[in-house]
Length: 334
Image (cartoon, rainbow, N blue to C red; front, side, top):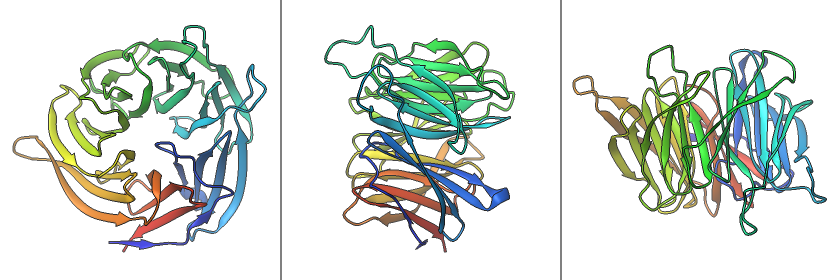
C-alpha cells in the first residue's frame, strides 16, 4: 500500500510530455531534487524528506538561431562515475549543466539541414553509461557524448544509426564488466528497440521490432528490457536475444513513464488513464525465465499522468506529475 505524502508545489503544471519528471536523490544532504518541463522552461526543485521545498531554480532553453525560446522536451540528471550532470533537450539543441543547474558546461546545437520543411527538429531521450551520455534526436540518430572527469571539454564522439524514426526514450544499466553485455536500450516512435553495448565504439547487439504502437518509455534491469507502449501495454524482453517473455495489458491508455528501483527490481508504470502501477520483476531459479507480479495500483483522479519516478533505489517512495497539475505528488510505502 502507498501513503500520500506532502506534495511539492510547482510554479506551473507539467507539460503533457512523456517521461516529464526526473529525480536525483542526495542522501548525504537528506535532499531530493526534482526536474519538470513546462514550455520553454524547466523547473528544478530541492526538497527535504518531509516534502518542504527548500530551493527552486528555473532554466530556459538556449535560443540558438531563433528569436523565440524553443520548447524543452526533457530534463534528466545523468549520474556518471565521477560527476553528475543535468541535461536539457529542446527543439534547438542539448544543454548540459552542473547538477544544481547553476552553470551550463556544454551546448550542442541541432543541425536541421537534413530535416524536411514539415518535420520538427528536437532532441529527446537521455541516458548515461560509463563516461558517455547518449541523447536521441528527431532523425533517429543517437548522439554519444564523451564526458571528462571535470570541466567543459565534452566531445561528440559518435552517432548511432539504429533508428529510422524519432527516438522516444533511452535507458541504461551498468555492464559490470561482462563481455557482450547489453547496457543501453533505445526506443523510437515506430516501437523499434535497439540494444547496444557501450564502449569506445558502441556495438548494436540486437533489434526488437515494433508492432504498430510507439514505445514511449523504456527501462533496463539485469538483462531485462521493460518497454511501455502507446497502446497501454508493458512488454518484457530478454535484452541479449530480444525474446519476448511477458506481455502485460497494464493500462487503458498510452503509457507515459516507466521507472525501475534497481535494488529490488520494482517496475513503476504510469499512463494517461490516471493510474500508476507497481510491479515486481524476477527470474525463475529453475528456468531463468522472467517473472512479474503486480504489487499495487494507485489512481490519481482526473489527472493525465505524464511523469513518474521512484525517489530511492529501493522503491519505497515515488513521485508523480500530471498535465494541468501544479504540484508534484509524493507517495511512500506503508
